[in-house]
Length: 357
Image (cartoon, rainbow, N blue to C red; front, side, top):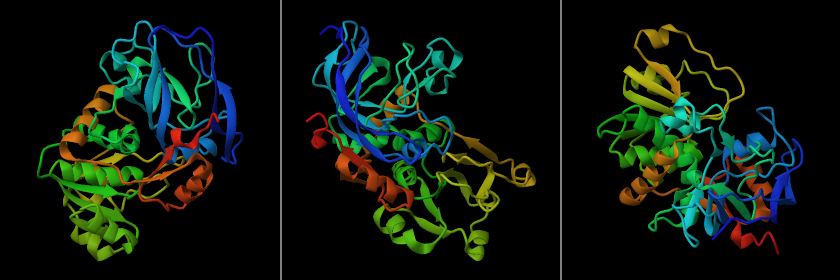
């Protein structure tokens, strides 16, 4: 099926200002090109970054803003040169929807590190039209930035994997942390953290959840299958756990001192930062130097890693733990997310919300 000549008008839910409150918003999708795919949005996960962006916590937010970058949809139209997808396919779109295709990261297949990447929302396409995300009835996405959702994954389950899932999977693969028998620490038990527990367990790692209180112990151990639970304010327990972990996945999206956690790492251990924080973090350099430890970070995964991660989830039975809501509940979902009152990812039933009705 060829590309559409005219723009189409759809409905999404947008923030109009830094209050972050979302309400119905009518806008036009960009014109489709030969490699574009039009998708009907089925489900969209709610990420903590959506909260940051709608409230302008990181600066640079542009309004009106339709958030959402964990998008699962059904292909309803394809451009003349689309070869990877057909009408009726179930597909996923994640954090980015464009790149320069010429720089070293793009040529190396890690396009998420392209300096000219185009974000799924709060950005601008090459034609000057603002990007809008998955809290809308439809999207137009270049085929390069879509993945196929395997038949073994329910679409609502797949949505959080497109950000929270691959955000954990990518660094474990890149830093050579996929072999069985490693000892993992997961710092923070939210949307990304709970996926960290699930992926680490699926890879055969001994998993310790690290949290600020005892409140999530039963969830971590009984429900998610963590092997141990460590309260960061318990000085004796923290001291006993020193030099015990090969890596820590730090998912906390707020300021926190790193000095408390670095002693937990073994020689050559890695602390991998994943939380988006708008304040500088601090640590004493000897805490890194004397154990040849690394503090590093990782963004989302590449499109290739995302597809690989989805297949891994099917093979190992990894799923996200979700709460499905309708779009009219999204502002309450944001408020609950802000106070960490979700287990563990909200997913909006976009198609079931009948946005264009």
